[in-house]
Structures are given as structure tokens and as C-alpha cells.
Length: 213
Image (tube, rainbow, N blue to C red; front, side, top):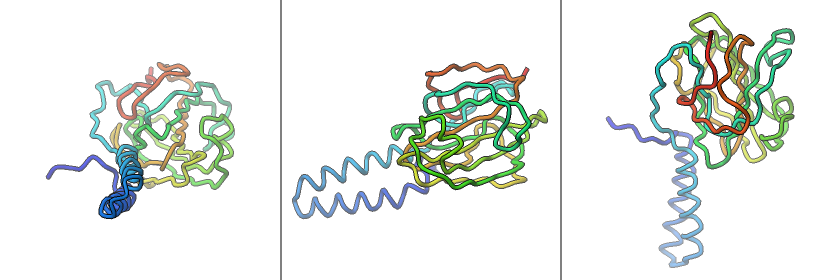
């Protein structure tokens, strides 16, 4: 059976858009059907969920999301530990990016922690600590811990997480999505060799963020 490359969460929006487009078309009101037609095309693009095959190399850490690298910085703590050092790599997803989030390295989900918050623009650094967010801690097959934090943005008001503690995933598998513009923070062990820099654009499940040494 062929899979439709659209996330299930997008269908209600698409149906409403198509219905409104058809209604204005029936009423022969061009401004209405053109507007809703364009909005429907945008929604289909936003919720696109393409199949992606992870590149070879088990030591490679993959991007958890599509978007632009807005931060690469060493940290003295993580969302999971106040005393654990890490390297934070942040990816800003505009409304034009694919918003499916993926696991960077194969492993087991250790912890999922939701934190309510504000809705600042997701490209701001303070969004990492002030915005609504969902933090997922993975224990990789190498025994290393990796954190992925889904962060809501100015427009994004809905974080969707599909994984639970104890669940085993292969690298590149889907873990959730964030609706309408957002940010994903990746927390890596300090020993990881980072292979991206600020301003670079990446694709979830395909681009290599770093490498276990």
C-alpha cells in the first residue's frame, strides 16, 4: 500500500481548506477560492512528511529537523541535568520547512518532559528556556545520552510527540512535529565532533550534525 507523504495531523486543515476553496468556487467568488486555494497549498507543504533514508555511518549524528543552524555552543548544563556538560546545536524551522522531527542516533527513549511556557520568536536564544517545549532524552546504542528539545515559536502553538519512555528507535525515525514555525535544540556529549556551523541549513534525518569519536 502506497503511503501518502503527509503527516496525519495536517488532514483536518487540508480538508477545511479544500472545502472552503470548493465553496467559493461554487459561489464563483475568485478572491475567496484563490485565497483558500493558496492556503491549502501552503498547509500541504507544511505537513509534508517525505520518506528519508539515513546516510551510512553508525557514528554519525543526524539533524533532528529541517532548518537553519542558529546556535552551536558549549553548555554547562542540559534540560535533563544541571551538572552535565554538553554542546547545544539549535535549528530554527521557518513555516516553509518540513516540520517532522527525527531521532539523531539509534537508541532508547529514556525520558520525555513537557514544560509549558511563552511563545517568543523561535530564532531567539531565550526561546530555549522560556518557550513551551518538550524535551526527549535518548540513550544511544553506544551508551551516550542525547537530548532533543521541541520548542514552540511565535506562530507554533502545538507540539506533537509520538514517542514514549522505553521505546527503541532507529536513527532517522520520526519522533514528532511542531505546528507552524518552531525550533529544535540538540544536546550532545562534549566529546562529539561537531560538523556544522551557525548559518548552515540542514535536513532532518539526512544532514550530519556531528560524529561520535
